[in-house]
Every structure is written in C-alpha cells, then in structure tokens.
Image (cartoon, rainbow, N blue to C red; front, side, top):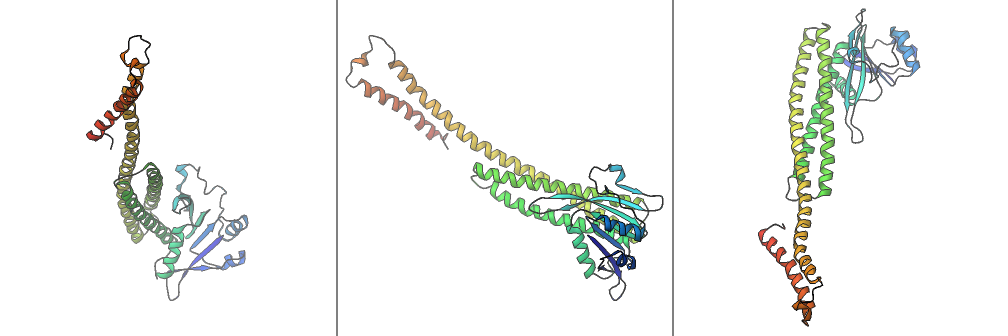
Length: 324
C-alpha cells in the first residue's frame, strides 16, 4: 500500500493532505512531503525508484539488522533511521520495526503493519493547521505521537493493575483465581517491558537526529521536549515494575498459604491417626496373657479407644486454632 501526503498550502497551511495514487503517472505529478509504504509491492518500489531515484532494499525492516546500522547518514545527506513502534491489542502486543529514509526533503516510511501512531498523526495533522512544515516535522511528530501513545497505554496498565490489586488483596484468594491473576500480571509486565523498550528506541532516534544537526532551532527544542516526556515515562515504567513485582509476590504468597493449609490438614490427620495405629498394634500382638482378650466388650472397647484417640488431637488442635 502506497500512501502519499502533501502539504496543503491553501487555507489550512501545513495540514497533511493524502493524495490518491493509483499509477506511476499520479506519483510523478505529486510533490509529497511524506510517502508511507505499508507492505509495498515490487511495482510500488519501482515507482519510488523512478520518481525519486530511491532504491528500497528488501531487508530494510529486517529485525536481524545490526544495531549499528539502524541510524546512519549517507554521504549524499540521505538519512536512515530504523525505529520500533508499539502495537497494543488484546490478541498480540508487539513492537513493529519501521524504516525511515529522509531523501531530498521527503520522508519515506516502510513497515509491514498499520500502526496506531501513524493513524494518530494523520488525524491530528488534518485537524491542526500549521502542525507540519516539512518532512523532518513529520518524523518528529511521529515520535511525539509515539510517546503519547505509550503514555496512554501506561495509564491503561495502571487501571488494570488496580483491578488486579483489588482481587489479590481481598480476604481469600483461591488457587484458580490466583492463577488468573498471575496470568493478568504477566501480560501487564510484558506490555510494560515493551513500552520501556519502545521509548528507549525513540530516545536513541531523537538523540541521533539532534547529533546529526539536521534540525533547526525550533525542531531541536521540540526534540528536547519529547526527550523530557520520555524521561518521565521511564520513571512510570520503573514504578509499574515495582508494583507488578509486589503483586506477583503477594499472589505467589497466597498460593503458598493455600498449599500450606492443605499440608497442615494432612499433617494433623497423620498425627491424629498415630494413637489408633499404636492401639491397633498393641491389640494385634499374639500374647497369651492379655486381659482384654477375655472381655465380652473387648472389641468395642478397642474401637472406642481408637475413636477417642483420634478425636482428642482434633479437639486440641481446634482449640489452639491450628485448623483455621
């Protein structure tokens, strides 16, 4: 899919306007500031090569690409940046690699999935006049929207952990509910880790842009503001990791308590059954002179004595509160 955006220099100066591109001729007539390629076909890559003289490699969004090759500048001034962007959905939360190429004042973005951050920028750019003035603004606004998207997800993690806390910190937690809680905590921990990785990657990209001296004074200050926002997100993710660890430990503690209750019941039962076992062993001895063998009520007496020896420990343990 090929999405081409130009600056609307009419009444709403600086607003992004998406053009309909259905052929190489349509692309040749456009003057884009941003070309977004989602799973581009070989034909669309050919259009880009013919129109802009830019060759897009097949492995440009390869996850196995060397880290040192993710941020670099060509001798001709062409800028290459590869960043990770977050997708948070119920089915599969993941980080998606996006390749950016700044070529002749046109930003090219190549990725394999539709990204929420890109949709957010397109919506915002249509509504806010003069938001974007050039291709570098597009890139900065994408990173700004990415930081905001990460912040929104962190707020969602806060809310979900509050719900989990209410379940964990109530009076009784059974093993089935504890298992569900652990699963929910694990998902939030994974999401929090992905956010931390995402903002770290954004910080690296912004630092590279600032070092490359490609930004004007206003854009440089905007980059610094985005970095400050990212620093605040770091402290939030660290707090959430602590909260997640606490809830994880508390849940595991409740599971251990439930298991100890079961073990305690077995231990009490074992202790209570020792006296009747001793009695049965005594009366199972084959001695000639055992007075109870001649009693008419000897057998019921032995059974009653066994029952009493079982009941006495249970009554004692109950009064001590050891069976609760």
